[in-house]
Length: 235
Ligand code: FES
Image 1 (tube, protein in one colour):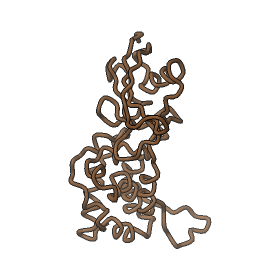
Image 2 (cartoon, helix red, strand yellow; image 1 turned 60 degrees about the vertical axis):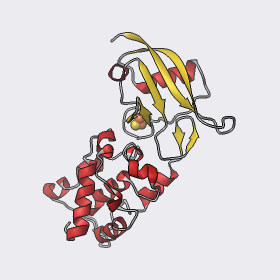
Image 3 (cartoon, protein in one colour; image 1 turned 90 degrees about the horizontal axis):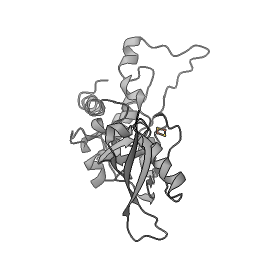
């Protein structure tokens, strides 16, 4: 552990006073084992209290602090200063309207998430029993249960930047999580939704989403599995 001086360049935008975004640079002193979010806190608490950014758990669980850090989407509470260096640029995630500084409007993202019916649908009453599932059946969607809805994947997708009607990788990941759940009865409905123009066929297999995911979900593979389920009617 060592104390380091970091130059933090942050893209700032306050729609109440700025015509367009601009960069501001701050010098902060942190431990090299601190996270980028600690450097941002240093700015907000000791340099400029008007800086706005989202964070909540600060432990990589809630998904609220996805940002573009040195050009790549990441969670500010996960990335260590010693892994990004002492010259750090921070921008809001792309493809969503900036409300202020690093805070973007997440409503379109959550509307797309909701559009794929991301919850268990089963019309039978299990009574006092649990809905049982074999370890093999659980394994089929294990990877996609790890999503924390941070939007790092969707906002790293060049198709999403150019086409806001595309549901995006995160919505497909969360559809996958239920499509392949043996206890669910609505896989066909979700596949119909994802077979539309706004669905999986927009994906051009760029792998940007997989690279951006802070939970290491194999997103491109999940999207391919959904495509195959539509094409071959196989779940
Ligand atoms: S603040 Fe919760 S994931 Fe970073």
